[in-house]
Every structure is written in C-alpha cells, then in structure tokens.
Amino acid sequence: MTTFIFTVYLTGTVGKDLPGPISATSWLSWAMAAAGLFVAVLAPVLGGRSDAAGRRRFSLAVWSAVVTVCTAGCFFVRDENQYLWLGLLLLAVGTVAFELANVPYYAMLRQVSTPETIGRVSGIGWACGYFGGIVLLLLCNFGFIAGDGPTRGFLDLSTEGGLNIRLVAVFAAVWFGVCALPVLFVVPELPPDGTAHRRGIVGAYRELFATIGSLWREDRNVVWFLVSSAVFRDGLAATFTFGAVLAHSVYGMSASTVLLFGVAANVVAALGAVIAGRFDDRIGPKPVIVACLVGMLVAGTVLLFVRGETMFWIFGLMLTVFVGPAQSSARSMLARMTVPGREGQMFGLYQTTGRAASFLGPALFGLFVWAFGTDRAGIGGIIVVLALGLLLLLRVRPTRDRALA
Image 1 (tube, one colour):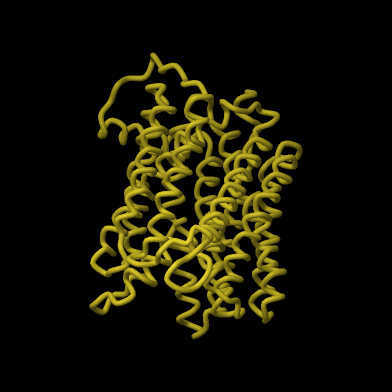
Image 2 (cartoon, rainbow, N blue to C red):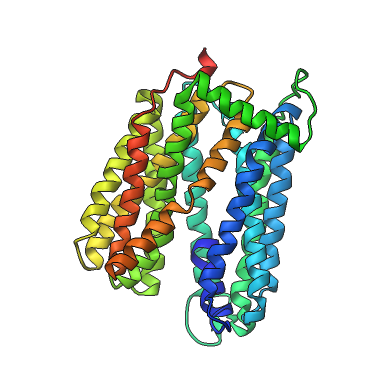
C-alpha cells in the first residue's frame, strides 16, 4: 500500500496544493528520515532486551499491532492539504513500528529452520511476502482504484474525499493484521535468559557499544558484513523506490503500465528468492549475494543507455529478479554468523546499520539527476551504491554456521 498507493496519494493528491516553498514530496522524505533515525536508535536495544527476556513473540505482536492501527488510521486522511501532516505522522510511526517488528521476526529465523535449510526458509519467506503483496496490490487496484469518473473499481467506490484510497488503507490494515497472526500462534516463545541482568535504556546502550567493540575485536567479518549489507541493501531499496519514477519519466510507461510492471517485478523477485534459497544452502549466502549484485550492475549499466518500454521491461525485470535473492541471502548470512541466543541483538544492529545508510541511494540518485540534468542519470547513482556495497562485501570472510559450532 505504501509504495504504490498511499505515498502517491499523499504527495499527488493530499499535498498537491500545499502552500509554501516546500513540496509534499520533500516533507515525505523528511518524515521518512525521522522514522529512520528512531529505528536506528531503538532497534538494537529493543532487540537485545527481547532476547534476554524471552519476549520475541510479544515484541512482534506489539509492533505489528501498532502497524495495523497506523495503517487503519490512514482512513482519516482526506484529500485536503491540511490532512498531509496526519498522513505523514501515521506513515512515519507505522514505518518505525514495521522496522522494529522486523527485529524479532528476523531473529525467529533459526527457530523455524535448521542450519541445513536456513537459506531455503529465508528465501521462501521473502517470496511469500512478495506474492502476498502482489495479491493485495491487484485486489486494491481492481477493487478500489481502476477506472475513471466519480466511482472506481468493481466495488464502485466514490472518489469524493479520497474515499476509495482511504478504504484501501482499511483493507490493507485488516490484511496485515490477519496475516500476522499465524507466526504469533505457531512459533513458540523462547525461555528467558536466566543469566541476563535486567537493565534500563542506559545499560542497554552500554551493552550495545560493548557488543560492537567486542565484535570488532573478535570477529570483524560480522562488522564488515553489517556495513556492506547496509550499503547494498540501500541500493536494493532504491531500485524499487525509483523504478516506478524512471519507468514513467524516462521510458514512457503509462501509469497503468507502471502498475503492471510493479506486479511483474514482485513476481520475478519472489521467484528469484525461492530459487536462490536452494543455492544459498548449497554454496553459501555470500556467492549468491555477489552474483546478484554483479547481475544488477550489468542490468543497471545497460539501462543507462537503452530507450523505450521494451528495453525497460527486459532489463528492469532483470534488475528486480536479483533483489529478492540478495535480500534473502543477506538475512540468512547474518543468521549463520550470529551466536545462538543473540539473534535479536544482531538483527537490531542489522536494522540500525541499514537505516544509518538509508540516505545513500536517494542522495546519490538526486545528485546524479542534478549534475547531469536528466532523470536517467539517477540510475548511475544507484549503480554506485550497489558497487560500493559489493566491494565492501568482498572483504567479508564468513565462517561456518555458528549453530553448528
């Protein structure tokens, strides 16, 4: 909902006539930056505390509930510029909650897999997320949005006050809440760590910095991986973030065709994640990630020079087919490198480093567009981020799965 529907509604409809020199799009980017800052500060501390207290499932339930409430709250954002601030607040808080929910969720990976299947399970998990998004996107498009005139979709919903888009938010909230239930009931809670001391926020941060220092002294590979993955994951995110913009402004796709491309991109990314998961278990996650980044660099370089919808369909989908495998294998690689019992803390660091580098893709995309005077040049910015992430990843020498040690 956020990528293809609600953010477009916020910037293109709600904030379209926003008074003042600052555009709705700029306010959106600042709101997301603020959300990223909160995640960077909170993720590692909350992850470590949930590990020690044996409350991963509880933590996941709380943050998932916040996401559901914020998503449903978007129903109250009407298509008038005074509602922009409510929309940005709900989107930012929901983003923080979603990222914090990912910390215990990722940490559960070892609970639902074995050292031999962790890559495959991670890949299937990413694929299910993509396929679920595809189904939801299609239902929202044909049920709430498609068509022209005062009513839209096969549900024949009114567009007055942005009602059809606001109802998408309610539908997405119900979808998210219901789909979050199985993991909360099926995956068992871990017992508390009886050796862990109860500590406040200051104590948690003291332990966090001690952990980083200890990692640097004992296993610099983990530190280098956290840094490299933060960079290349931002490049992966930028691929989807700016893909729709480039498809329309550079390659001439209509809005409806862009939506179809988005569906196709999610399909190939999901299939790629499933297939690569098997290679992850056989040859390890690092070769999978390296191959994906190289493939994306090749496809991105070609896109810098080709024109037309057909070329974008070919090489744009080639780009996205590597996104799912890279994301999935990055998650499984960290899980393999993590000492059992510290998954929440390590995935908290994973979220923090990712957020700390989240400015790179948008900043370099904008810098290249400004420097060369064309949206096409922004692809070069994404290529630079992916290449930097690849170079940093090559420094990592992963050991065998810590769960087998």
